Image (cartoon, rainbow, N blue to C red; front, side, top):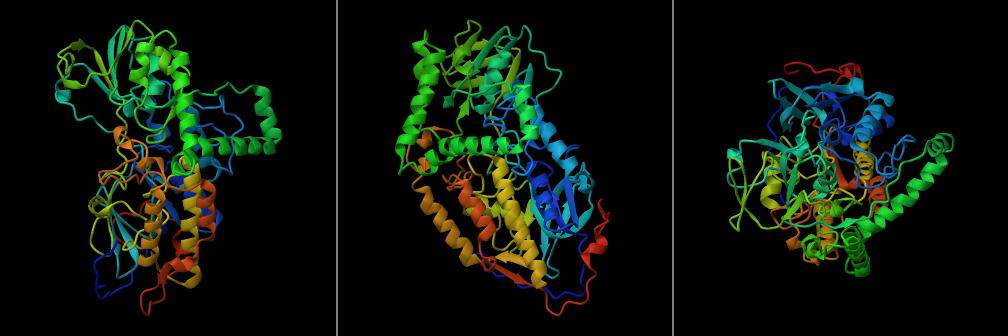
Length: 534
């Protein structure tokens, strides 16, 4: 990725940033990176959150049946285990409560300004800082900014003719209303991804009729879920080493199932075949008397092309007389129902869109304009020239900027692992800058390009390029045909690199002959927004 040259304008004055670090987003990423920075002695932090609470995805998603799709022991911060999960796979409200408890315990709430949306960030090359524009017209300046928005926060609407004409209720699963009552209604669900797998068994017994429209089936494995007994929770509290050991075991299982099988497909295709066999067995065990459904519900793409999920109830739901699996393509939506390409129309009262989220699409990651030293918006650059970032975190031409969920950043098991690794990495960058008296940190072009070449080389071994993934309609893939969501490495390698990568991969600099600048510690009392400009 070669950025055009940029000549820095002459500076007439030195502007002091309002904060050393501004974090945008108070979900898992924002909370985790703030905890890491404070642990490393970086205290002048402000967090901007557009909603009114922490939690991100787990705050926003409240559809029936929502739960984690890996064990709760793995899906949590390694430094803050929770002994009180109700189940092996915790329901979504417990994850939201967990984020709130962690934010409170580690003193993150006083750092957050809620109800604030960032619309644009521009790097001031003359003063080595970022100017952040807010939706209310105010500005803030920061030496470093961290984009901590999640990947599953912006609902993706289906491109289906007539959707706007439907006169009944239309609900996207990401915006589920608490007051929704489906009792006695004719309901249609469009989509059969991981969200639908959790939702459909929950609403099937309530609706008068449930039609499920499937474009692409999903691999579903048995869910080893159990209620966690009170005696075990007590044991976890008094013997935390036991829970750490259990986390290690579930980590290893998840890593083998969700990571190794995908990224080392060429070296060990038998892992994928084993998972596919397990998925087919799960389907046939749940529907032993309905072989006519087996082919419809069996994916034609390889295990791992899109994120698989777990359920012991999803398939058997289609054996109900009041549930119909529709695989004929939708032609259009009418004011009262859905018409498929075979000419058949089904009348409905409520339309539920389980159509997923925007991921690596312009305007979503990041969710605001990021204008670097080249005058180009980062989202536009990625859209035009492929998604790429050093270690999934930093990009040449965008100094002092770190994106938590960057291209090829996410580890296939737990989001928390990515957060911890990237938090360690960026904290090292900021601390090294402070140690050197530098005001600007930028990944070297050569190091970035070498890393991207290595990522593309690794991709050749993955399931994404080798096992009919074009048939999967997976959000792992972008419009370039790349799969920038997942990092083709193990979590152990990712964490090791975050802790040990050479800081000389970055260029550290300061503006020439800087005047005396007040210590940023004097400004750290600013835990709230400063209106206007500095």
